[in-house]
Length: 323
Image 1: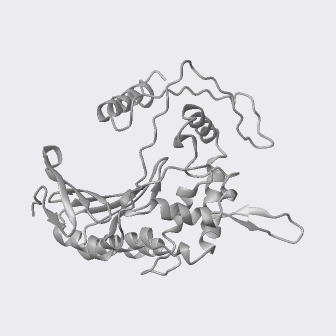
Image 2: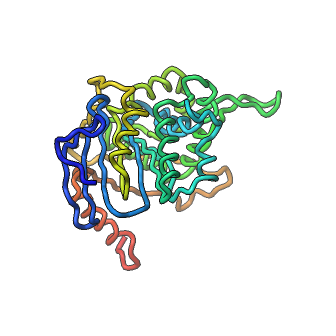
Image 3: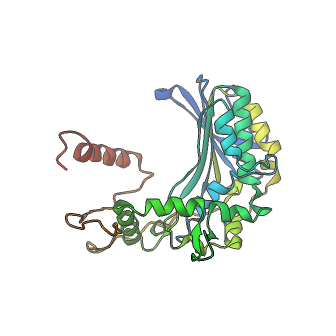
């Protein structure tokens, strides 16, 4: 069914509609009037239905709070008090896609399924996870997914452990990761992009339970969320479900997360020299890396972004590429 602009559907106001010829889909933008949640729905005949909920989560330091929270909300919730519902979904659902990802400025939870009942079940698990995770009742989730002290024997010193901590130790064992982190810190010294949203290993243990829960309370609110729906959906019933089961429990706060302030351009090129780890017995000869990074435009500028991707392919990724 085609939704009508400026009409209300279960608390959602249709703010814009446009037909997209390239994908033969009706694009509909809606806003939930009570909670402030926004939706983009691409209605088409594709039976592979997609749901994604994303939150703006600009990091406030290098402790990796967005990344740890992404893991932690999927460790049980109000309706689904299992240890790892995500693992059970991977094993037992009919999904065609199921994941969660942390980016430098957002965290997203996408899923897809061709089966209507399975799609609804997956959507319910994810919504309950992001809005009502057990992290507020189980203080051990941060220790498990983030960091904790560990000891292997009475003669050994205490060491740090944890899912994200160990993951990021692996990431930062490579020269590329170290250089990328230092480059972002140099390119964006005045905004959130200078921080590592995944977590810097030495900074992860600075995250406290209080800061962890406050981050969820601050950023995981419908007013700071964007929901994406795609495919052959019963959209009116889906909107009714979203309103009655989740969004109607929230009110706009008037404190939605603001856009990240663009970095003021530099007057001259910056040069930076950094060190990266190598093995004790590893030869350091011919192990010098060189990077050149340039800030180009804005990521929301679709044409410029596409042009840069094409340029990257031509310069770097083809057999005949010069670099």
